[in-house]
Length: 416
Image (cartoon, rainbow, N blue to C red):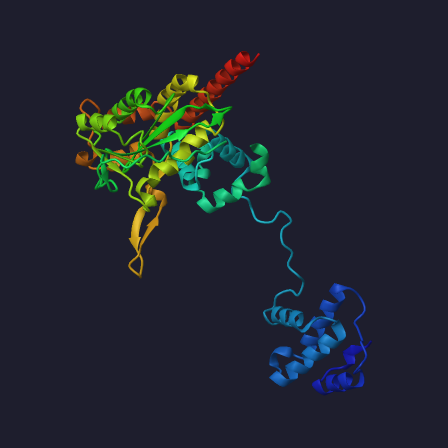
């Protein structure tokens, strides 16, 4: 086809009328068709044409090149802007990767050490590892966004690098304790407490874990005992309350009879601590410790049955390894209340408020810290600096593995 002879808009219109129903095409491949478009646009001075004449040129090119109208508009736009008509090709490697294979492996390793904390808590661990402990491997991860952290966790590279609930026993109504939520008013020393049962097996009860969490700082103490009767529970409870670095001002429990009884009330009365209990249909009254039951106790001690005779061994693990890690090295999320346009209080968890319980305690005023006599904030901070977060987590994981290996070995020996 000698289309070079078509040098006017009138000639193009005659050509379109004469070839109606036909499909004349420029021979050759993509480059030949693009060259044809460029020749026609240049020969006819497309940029100087009126709108009607430009429409004729577009119809002609659509008729002879086989391009769609949308694609022709893109090519004409490039011609007018003096850009090459050829398609731009994306780089073969795609977008540049900011986080390397080493970063993904380090993320998986840190998650394994800390039992896969939340994204905000993990980000805080990376910041502490880089800025506080000077671990250069965490330099890039220290600035990762929480959303992209979850993207890396969902990747195949991350995956490659990497039992029974019992509800609280209902107790009979007794006139012990005040039925309301605790009122800490920003002061440390108001404890929420709950028990977690380690399952039954063949009709035999497992150990009981006692979980106590401070309302303001989230300072947490976990202990274990054989049974939750008074003879077993009271000594453990007294030891737990003495472990907190601040004076106990109040203890809040649900309505289980293991806490709402006269012996516990007498123990707290000696400490001048108030005993409160949850209200009906108010699920948030003890929500903090209930959340910690799953996020801490079940995560680190699991769901499998642990016979009661191992309670002392599990309690020693909690006292020597788990509790120091939870309070000195494991970041927690602290809420910030905001009032929206409708007057509703909305809780947000900004990155700046992701702190360890010790950091939260240090952020309080001296009066609100309520530290016990003989305990100083400097001494607690010195204890935390004795090892990094990852070193404490690695120590915890090794101790946990040794604990369960010892339990399984003794169980298998008895079974044989």
